[in-house]
Amino acid sequence: MFLPHPTPFLFDHTGALIAANDNWKDTQQAQIQATGLAPPNNLDAAILITLSPGAYTVFLQGKAMVTGIGLAEVYDVDPSANAQPTNLSARAFVGTGNDVLIGGTIIRGNGTSLLRVLVRALGPSLASAGVTTPLANPTLSLRDANGNVIASNDNWKDLQQAAIAATGKAPRTIMNRPSLGYSHRETTLPSLPEKTELLELP
Image (cartoon, rainbow, N blue to C red; front, side, top):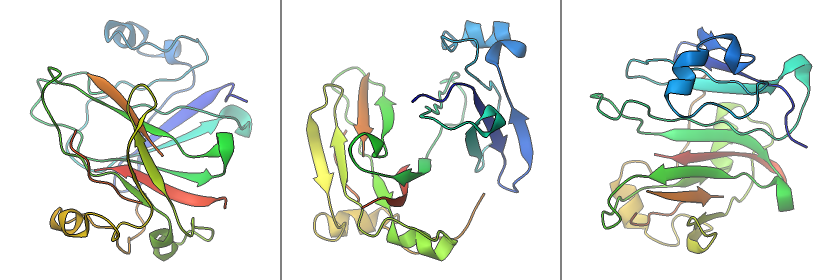
């Protein structure tokens, strides 16, 4: 069931709350509509904000603690700015079937350009961050806009170990801290049981 009344909270790297929203039309309605990305339902939520370079965290929960399936999105609405998102991650309880963790990204370009990306799915590494039920052995598949699998991985050292290590972002122990569409559900570096997992697109 979908989340009937989503409420996002935006925190900075110190854990300070810097923005929140209940219904997107309550604040910034005109500005959000001007982006062309206004949510389709009045009960959906949105935050339009200009951020300095740094690490930020979004908490998404249901109003009055109601639960359901929700979608959290981040859009760069000012591509001309001298800053850009460099990492997007999501932590969630991973189930099976319809309860797998799904993340998506859009890569802009002229259709012939290629962007090399690293997609990581972390499970065991989360234990050092205090997660009591980390996903013991995550697997990952990267799909194109038509749902075709274009890359997959089980254990990151099995394939592309040297290439992944060379990025400086190979899976490791982590510390606690507050033109085409692709969806990705262990690590893969392409050109272009139920536990908690962290999915990242550095």
